[in-house]
Length: 352
Image (cartoon, rainbow, N blue to C red; front, side, top):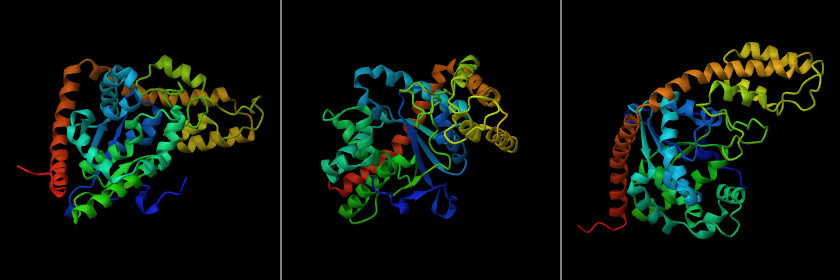
């Protein structure tokens, strides 16, 4: 894998400039299951902060989710509402952030079609992110065409809203690079800057490991703690959290590296000074894993209880959720439609 182009990467969002208008951010999720702590660390709590200073579009990428879920389309359909509930429960305000459903904006598919003529199959196959995801899913030669062409679809999603910032993990940076390749090629064809290049907004705290110590918290691996988890589910999950396999006795010195319990405490414990003392005690010996996990459970219970309560209350009003999604999608479509009109005009496809 080649090193990312650092000119396209920033670690934190820049201040908005009133003279140039609000900075546009596009982010989102594939609705294939409820969101979990990994999503909260990697994106959700940042979105809550960004919505106060930026023009933020949050996409429920249901069409993209179908590229490897065509055998279970109902899973995607039902999780649109589940993910929307998670968004609202953590504090995303639909009055400040535009929440949209990808499949309900046909202009995104239209832009994807045009952009596919600006990228080769070989370039798509070389995309490091695509190559990794293909290997993870075991597609080998049976790669769904929609999955292979996802970089063009993502370029359409980003450019339709003229987003200049896209929050992603480091593994997604090649997708941003390919988006900008397509944007630059189109602007050369148009002989003017119609589309906007974007930068990857990489969070300071990136990917959260799974409860089992695996590199990634993933729904498919069953090593997650969902944002809507019950108190009992949190307790059960914390008991299974991976710690230090060499820490066999309380008096033994413990190790922090790879210790998921401490990784989670680093991310969520509001009392970092006390956590530093706990770490020092664990490293020198004399502190059992059960004490560490007890602290972790307390932190997670206190953090997730209000999220769960708000989620349960919102779930009682399905009509409100659907109306919110409809209104956000309609607002987003107006923006995407304008961009699509500009693209068609530049390509000479406006006849009437």
